[in-house]
Length: 253
Length: 258
Image (cartoon, rainbow over all chains, first blue to last red):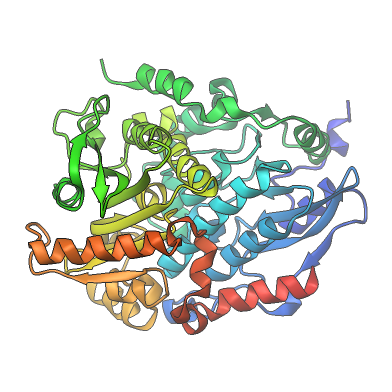
């Protein structure tokens, strides 16, 4: 057990720090880093300052020697929203990755400012995940402040394994998408504890909607990520019979 | 009910497949002597989940679509008729895991397509957000009615102005300079995202010649093997070269660096 003072928080880390901490030491090689100046041209017109990596960090890394695609969405930039550039980055890494991929998802889903270009990209991402997981593990980690919502929640649900911390939230329609991405203040803050109880990592793992629960600790997540890569795909999660039972429990009396 | 109207109009020798909730119509039939299974989401005022009574994609709809796609006979293509106003927005749905309902539909479409089953989609009304991702976007070929009622976007129109704290005029201005935020079918087609547009006089009452035109296009697409193309193939359509140049550039630069 690592003393609490030496633990490194995933939540408090940047997307690059997260990938570096989770990959085999010294193996992460970023592609299209901020110096490549890949930033969205659609945002200035809409009063938003763009970011030079478009809020998505990608590259290649080793994980126990496996040659994997590494993807981290930056939840601090426009709620981790997916636009044309970020979406193309994720899709192409998934298409190219040899021995699997991990996705550190902190995302509200499609970027409203690039609406249908994000939509097109997420359809490609979903297809690429299913194609890749047929031959190698695709592991999603949902442990950041934003959680994983919108179109990207569909993509995450397709992954071989899903790792969550209690901080992470996982659902289709999140109130935070609206708050973070567009700043609406209408959402009643008193509903927040309820949102966590219903969609947070503890609940999702208990439901079997996510596979492995981790602490907010990079070392714990690094160990768990390797464990998830060794596991076979969890086919149970999207089983029709199981979902039918689950949903029936939720139906109004 | 446009989904049902077009599903019934397009399929010949159509018969309803039993065992699905009233909000999901599943028809088996033929077009030009080849087998198709048509699937569409319909309003159902007595759906057990109240937030999915107006044709939204909810918990039951995802399961039904997945089952319909997986259960089609071996020689049948899938024809998804798309008129979905969005996903069900409900606390109960979120707690149950609505994203899994959409994911299981997506998974079914992708796996069947990757196994070689042709998937076609025809947008006859609204194609909004997650609901469109789960029902339509994984098709190898997507056609749409060129109709003012057809709408393609990631969020219902009423929400956009509210969420962006702007006015309808400002939303319209942005749509004119950032086409990705527009909602009309012609702009979506200009990204290379659609394979065919069909002019219709009244999308609620298709005329025989209009039906025949859509059938002919789908039949030709099937014979050309277009129903099994992956979504990324849309980047290879001619309009994408200019209108999705950024995505193409990003992909090229990743390939160079890989």
